[in-house]
Amino acid sequence: MFLQDSFLSMEMSMEIPPTLLELAGESLLSDEAAAIAALEHLPAELFPFLFLLAYHSRQHPEPLKAMTQAWPYPVLHLGALMRRPRVEFLKTVLDGLDLLLAQDVRPRRWKLRVLDLRNQGVDFYGWWYGDGTRDHSLTGPITVHQSSPNMEHPLAPVEVFLDLNFNVRGIDAFFMYIIRWAQQREGLLHLCCKMLRITVGPFQRVRQVLDSVQLDCIQDVEVISTWGLPTLGKFALYLGQMRNLQRLFLSHIHMLNEEDEDENENMEEEEILEGEEILEGEEVLEGEEILEEDQEMGEEDEWQREEQEHQEGQEEQEEPDEQGSFSQFLSQMLRLRRLRELHIVFPSFLRGRLDQMLRCLQTPLENLAISHCQCLTHSDLTHLFQCPNLRQLKSLKLFRASLADFSPEPLRALLEAVAPTLQDLGLDNCAMVDSQVEAILPALSRCHQLSKFTISKNRLSLATLGKLLRHTARLRSLEVELYPAPLECYTTQDIEDTVNQERLGEIRAELTGILRELGQVRNILLAAKHSDGYEFYEVAFP
Image (cartoon, rainbow, N blue to C red; front, top):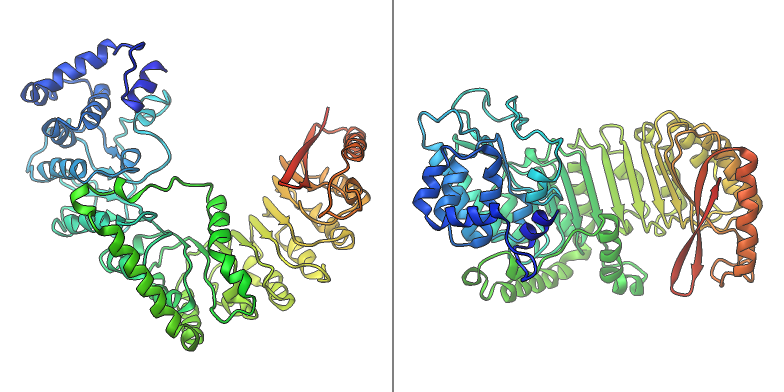
């Protein structure tokens, strides 16, 4: 543990002296010629250690280049080191890869076939040394894109994986460097970009990258940006070419002629926060951490200027182009024949026409999530619940849908249809009342695959909450349950009011009694509103 911590930070405190292994590595790297010569005899298990040591020192590009060329494993995972990409480091690694590609006959020990630049949430040290069960000496076939040549050939091309994550200013230049490098080596390697995420920047910067990559590699798209419909329409022309797309996440797509101006003014701040929470808060880096100083001077000002000009130009043409842009978006949705997951946050651009998008679905969805969907009409919701391509859902999440005065029958029918497959159901903050919840209880009790159920922030009584607990007791796979604190917990039986702590304690005891009566080991959470947000209270048996 001590070795890992010291390695990750590379900051040796005065109280913690370097280990013998670290001292040996530093000594070896101090003589670069000797270090390169030693790679032929160096145990494969020490390559990651020495690679990381050279990376952090920033003083040994030649050994880094040689280690890339002679990498003794099929895959080199650099995603954790690419959180803060350094162009100089990347050039060194790619130069080493060039040396490997130039070999007519490669030593048997040189096994590199996949350079993985994706950030998969595991640090470099942890990938190689953190899990003793991981096998890094795999010799079997590497999963590659279907258009790649036969990877079983001894001189088969190398696969390079890269996620296109536009989360900081200037990142497009970094992507273009890798793309152009790959294009110049066509036939020797294949660049595969499976994930596209757009959170900042004008669309023309994104478009420059999309024009240069193989779009049918992309399987996962996230757009969290304040685009209007004309920009979505332009992006849709690229979206339609992503024939292997499996997951689509859209947030902040809006219309400038919306009646609720206050909602539009608050959209950027509130929706970005919501979108980041849904995506579990990926780290957002500053622009200066992406490119070296000589490459980013003036980059941020230029980016801001382009983004402002783009937004002003878009606003001028937004209204007359909206219908045509929406039609273009729909026409490209028809081409997504492998789409399995659809997530939409603040779907104001779908108000009154959600049915048009639903009719474009070509295959049954497995996961559907619509958040902050209070803008959808009752007609939209009816079409949603009746959509034929939602009959095989594994996950259904609606947050802040306006179900007040809405007939529960369409939702009940949908739950009956998905009962054999549904594993995750979220109906939070949907303005549901006792009668609506009680109407769906028989269908809910048939969802035997359900493992997660959340229905917080709805106006339910203690009696209805008790019925919910009894009906869901039949669901043996259920592990996560989140319910609203019943109305009786609040001073005026209004969920916008303050909680009466004494009454809340009595109700928790009563609910515990219900769990005891059911005779199940069970742990549920109650969400209760407070002045600064929501508090969660546990109810458990035994």
